[in-house]
Amino acid sequence: MKRIVILISGRGSNMEALVEACAREAWSARVAAVISNRADAAGLAYAAARGIATAVVEHRAYADREGFDAALAQAIDAHGADLVVLAGFMRILTPGFVQRYAGRLLNIHPSLLPAFPGLHTHRRAIEAGCKLAGATVHYVTAALDHGPIVAQAVVPVLSGDTEHTLAARVLASEHRLYPMAVRWAVDDALLTADGVVRQRDGAPQLLL
Ligand code: GRF
Image (cartoon, rainbow, N blue to C red; front, side, top):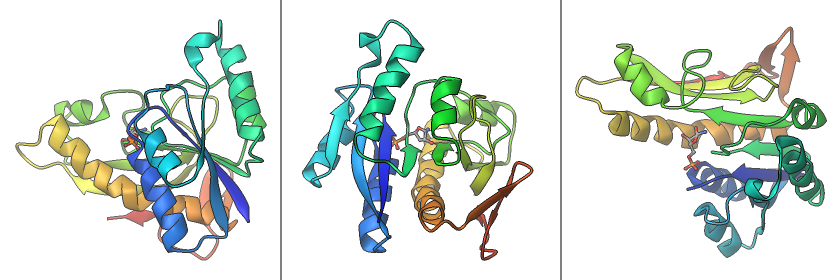
């Protein structure tokens, strides 16, 4: 039974989707803890109500990123994490932290990477006139919003979309995409070669 630790900073809707899929599909894993860098992250209440251990590691309590990441790693390791899943975790991680969890650290980003890393992805996609948008699950490397792509979901950009309507459409796709990808990681069904991730059984790594 693998142990998943999920890191959040806010709402936690992706975390909820993961917790629910894990239970519904009887993954050979359990969500061992949900950890936030903010005490006011709304998702913490959901996790606690589901009987999942929660912890807060306040980034503001540390003088530098190294100090924060060391405390965060300690909190993660206290739960014996096999997989560390970032779900709306709004901190840049140090290379040392990323290295510690190499190959078992996943993130979801609300764009079709490598397009639009960073913030305000939906606004930027609309401003660029994109007709497609989406979300990407990737292994985390030291470069922000880069790293081998595990799976992507694609949605249309509709005329009249605002960043809010587009964000809502992308978020709905994230809630299908992230459980699919994390389950593959749980099942050791992901193979990475030359920076490219393949699903062992040839399952489509694209949600349309
Ligand atoms: C999602 O859009 C995710 O892709 C991004 O931050 C947002 C988090 O939303 N990294 P939630 O906290 O999971 O509801």
